[in-house]
Image 1: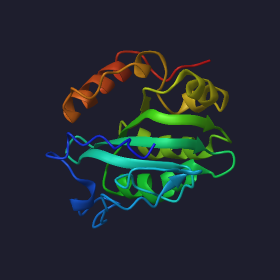
Image 2: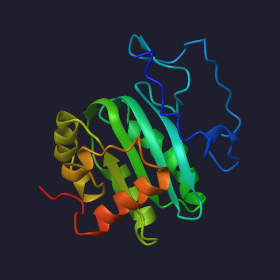
Image 3: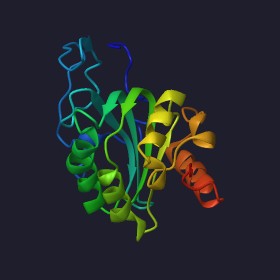
Image 4: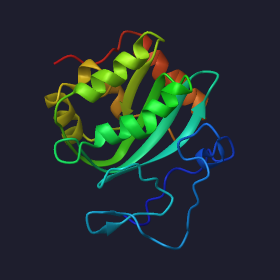
Length: 194
């Protein structure tokens, strides 16, 4: 896992540690010193920790005019034991909501497992943004991760599954990815109900 880097091709457009409105503003990184681990596996030092023991992130892009953010995640998303969503919501999302970011794309192709608890933080997140036209979308989730998300009833607050599970996002500019996801959401492909 140590050689999986966060996506870097948008760094010419946005760098979270250089954005004074970002929760990671001023953070410094080492290219050589590996300190963060997921269980006993070191991860690349460019990933950002936010309080979770098994889940890390990178804010790839934020557009304050169009009010959206794109995150990439890596690790095990464990709400059952570590309450990862609480840390994610309290330490990152709340700060971005305060900056009028209401639409969230969360790239989950490096989320290897998901363990659900209750859905209260997802509901809170959705309630915080819905009046401003906001939404949450998890893209490229593994099938077993998606199944666990469904069992935790996240589909009532988060868009994921089906057309959101196979998006070739890397060749796209961040604004094009945002427009694509928003088009899917507004074309009637709402949160999946099971």
